[in-house]
Image 1 (cartoon, rainbow, N blue to C red):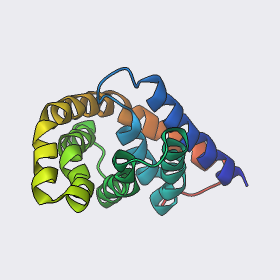
Image 2: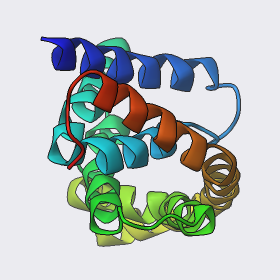
Image 3: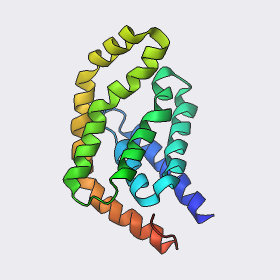
Length: 165
């Protein structure tokens, strides 16, 4: 029961912080949170991640851009699980930055499916400037916050009586 409450709070917190930062173009804490959830909770990270996705769809409705969320956060989660033993904050910042840089490319697949390959490529190329901003924002946020938040979340989870994956 405590785990359900924790995942509900974390998914909602992720959504709330993203909405609060929505005035900043492509600078968001979601990538950081997804990596933290993956490292601390393993596969259980799916719960807070997809609660966040549900809240996005609930608030904004089903749009092409949030259909991307059904798979892009899973890709980042899987990457973070694969390298979860890494301790150096530069590695986490690099992963988060690379994800931000590739975000538009990953999202372009939905646009390719709907409007054709050429449209998807044009859509991706038109947004590369936003992806660069996303990359820099993700890199800085992860560099500064990943390690302390990882420790905090691991400590909290263990004090709740759960073991780390």
